[in-house]
Figure 1 (cartoon, rainbow, N blue to C red):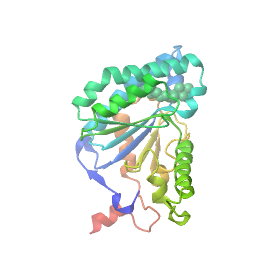
Figure 2: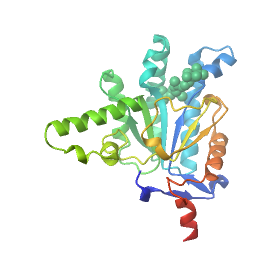
Figure 3: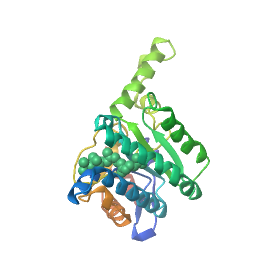
Length: 258
Ligand code: FPP
């Protein structure tokens, strides 16, 4: 993210004074939520979709501009077949059932992640969600599906290498902006805040490049319990962080001072 892109909205909505432009969510803990109740893992994922709906509604209310959700990682294919099938079924139902509400709420859906090798019906569904909502101007909901940050960066490197091999780019022209421009998130600002539920404190191959200056909040709750209050608590913690982007002074305090 270029320094000039640093933008936050001051708002009094729900008492939050500083709202990050882009919040990313690692929705973790569905399995543990189900296990704690003696339920099958599927039930945890199903309740996870309900929590996702609450998160989207809260993001709209808080006037967050971009909400990225890690719905299925490139590594999730190695889960048991039935679990993969149930997650794909939930994605299918989420888009089928919720697309009209998202559209009515002016939400623009974007999908990041590798598209090669996806089943044609999944691909068609993801494309439909993007196309139907393409002109919307409210919240951008970025769904990370079949997403892996290392794979995304490798694909960008490959694209640049091909350009060099074809004589369309000189090696010295490869810089951070050239790589950013070839990521799935090329036209999406970097996340300001990454929230992970379940108490785990790691990125798990999520937005590795884009997270360079993100703030992290790790919530002890399991994803199916996530709600507006949990989001607000993460935003409150974020509002107290001093973001310096490698400099001495935070752009936030510089803005306040000027
Ligand atoms: C992590 O919980 C969650 C996932 C692997 C997928 C996230 C999916 C959802 C919230 C629901 C599906 C939503 C869509 C749109 C497909 P986990 O299973 O790793 O939990 P655990 O660490 O407790 O086992």
